[in-house]
Image (cartoon, rainbow over all chains, first blue to last red; front, side):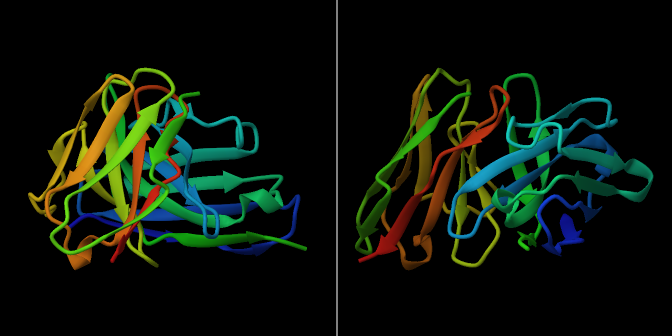
Length: 121
Length: 106
């Protein structure tokens, strides 16, 4: 059974940093692209970052580019999201998601339970 | 950036009623994917590559479309189908989601 378990969320002041982790199990982690998707309170879904199987390629939307860094440790079957210079608009539930990606398209076939990040003074 | 516009924003359907949700893309995409999110739960992949049902999805659901226009159809609404449905494109970065359609039981 595929399982994705996020951790590391919490309350953080604007301008500070936070690192999220996602522990994966039930599949060969190194064979899959992985991603983070967030959802602000009462709002829709927003893609945050994607990383290739080896970690050599990463992708971000403009809203987080230069502030967030996605990384992975295939030996530990773990995914990470380093979030710097946090803003109030980064307040959201962050989901770790397995990405099924190929040349024509990509989608997210398994999701974690989510972890809440609140940016407030 | 490809913008996805879902309609309607909210709708209510009676048990047994046929339901169609639409998603329009600002530029052509190769495929559309759909997610179901029940209240308080994580999203679940529901339909991928436009028309393929994810594991465990009842066959009263179907997906269709091409280019810039896609739809998700429920042949006969059931209580458990009440949820928010999001479309998503992965044909180009940034990957984008629609704002969602909240489907309620009438």
